[in-house]
Length: 444
Image (tube, rainbow, N blue to C red; front, side, top):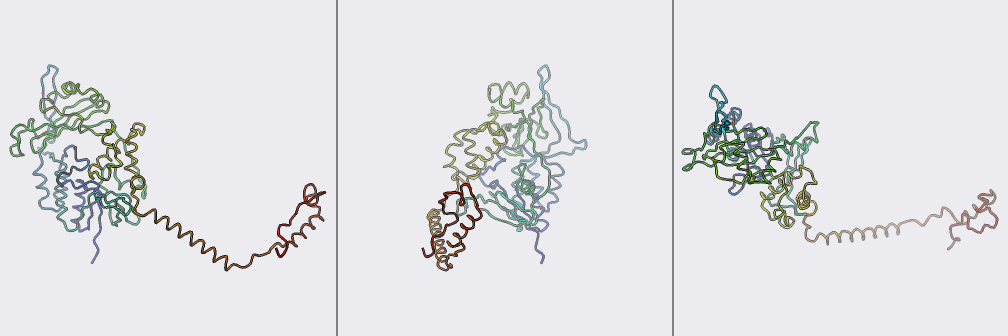
C-alpha cells in the first residue's frame, strides 16, 4: 500500500486552513502548526485578531470553498455574511449639506460578501477537526527547516519544557511544506537559505485605527438587525491623504477603519481635543453615528514606546504570563524594533533581549545539581589524565642520550680548531664559557 504524502502547513489562518482542507481531500496526511493559541477557545483572543478589518469574499473565495469537498462549509460561512453590492461615498457640500451616493460594483448585480475573519477561520478549523487525516497543533513556532532533507524543527510553547527550562523542541518530517504564516513568514525566511529567490519588504507611512458604529436600538441578531446606515455597501469617507471606511457586521454594527499618515496620528494624540473638529471637517456625519470612543485604543503600537508598567519586572513575570500575553508583548516589541533602534527605551531594549535570547541565555534555567555535575566531571577528567601520565611514564623506555658530554666536548675542540666565533665566542681570547657542553658528566 502506497504511503500517503505528508503535507505540513505553517499557519492556521484562513489561507492555511483552506489549504489544509484541500490537501486532506486529496488523501494527504496533513499537519497544521500555528504560533498562536486556538482562537475558538473561550477567553482566547489570538494575536492579530484583537483588531482586524473585515474580510470581503468574492467569487474566487466562494468558489474555493465550494470546491473544497465539504458539503456544508460554504452554506455555513455564507450564512454569516452580508452582501456588498457597491460603494457608498459620503461627503458634504459647500453649503454644509450631507450627501451620500452609491457606486454599484457590477452592472449585472453580482456582489461580494463581508465576513468576520475570526468567524470564517473558526468554521474552517471546525471542519479540519472532523477530518481523520488532519492534525492541528497550536502554540508551535517554526524555528528551522531543511528543504534538502525535508526536516523541520518547531518550539512547542504549550508550557511543556525541556530539561533546561526551554520550550520543548520537536523535529518533524514532511514531503511538502506550505507557508501560510503571513507577512513575516518563517517558512519564507528558511526557504531563502535553500533557494535563490528575491524578496523585498517595504513599509508605507500609513497607520490604521479601528472604530465602531453600534447597531440601532432593538438589534439582537441578523434577522432583526437595525443598521444605522445601509448595510449592503462599503461606506467610504474619502480624503486626500486619509480615508475612513465602514463595513457591516451581522449584529447590526459596523466595523470601521481610519487610515492616516503617522504624523497625523501623532498630532491627534498630542491634542486629542481636536478629534471632533478633525472628524467633522474630513468625515462629516460620522460622529453622529456612534458614541465617543478612544480613537487610538486599537492603533498599531509600533510608533510609541511600550508603557513602563507593561515591561516592569519582565524577568520575574515572563514565565507566569499567559501565552497570549507573551505573544502580544513580543509582537509589540517586534513592531517597535522595525524602526530606529535608537528610538527604543532602555526598558524596551532590555525586554527585547530578555525575551528573544532568554531561552538560550538569561532565561535559561539551570538544572538542579548541574554545578556539582560539572565539578565531578572536571575532577574525573583530571584523575584520568594523571593515570594516563603515570602509565606512559612507567612503560616508557630510558631517556635517549643523543648528545653525550663526550660528544659535546669534542664539538668544542672542533669549533676552536675552526676558530668559530672569534670575537666573543668559544675561539675568542680569554673565553670561559661552557660552549656546547650542556649534559652533566656520565653517571650523574
